Length: 122
Length: 108
Image 1 (cartoon, rainbow over the protein chains, first blue to last red):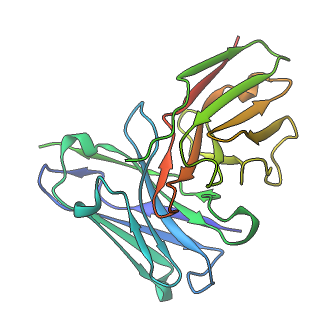
Image 2 (image 1 turned 45 degrees about the vertical axis):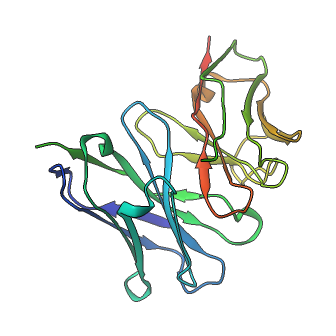
């Protein structure tokens, strides 16, 4: 059974750096083809893909946010960490991490965490 | 940057067929995926690789691809299908992921 859970601050101030941790179980980031992605959703708005890290440490970032994002993995702890610098109120959103599978459903995000709401305000 | 375009809203009566489209220039080369999201919940994958249905997803959900447009079809819509639906795909090189703007399905 695959589960993911996001953790991190619920409130950050403008210009601060946000650090979010995704802790997962039921799969390994040592498995060929597997990845973990981050997706966010501002209140009442659409999903936005942020970043993706694969088992081989290949990293992909949204072009519009690439300069502010860093994604890393700790395979031994079953964790993926996303940092976003220079936070702004427009970054207020629910942040999700999701499993990127291999096999027939590869290319999708087939299991999602519950999401964590991050508010950016002074 | 690459974009996927969805209609903001679709309305159908119970028992009718709902069709939600998603358009993008790279869709002839890249698979599309569809997610259902209900208020306060995380998205759920309902279609993979244009027309695959994950286990546990009802047979009334289906997908198709006709070049630069993919379509999610829900046959015999039920009240419980009222939700936001998002398509997802990649740019032509497969490097970047993108979500459509979402479509709110209303069951009248």
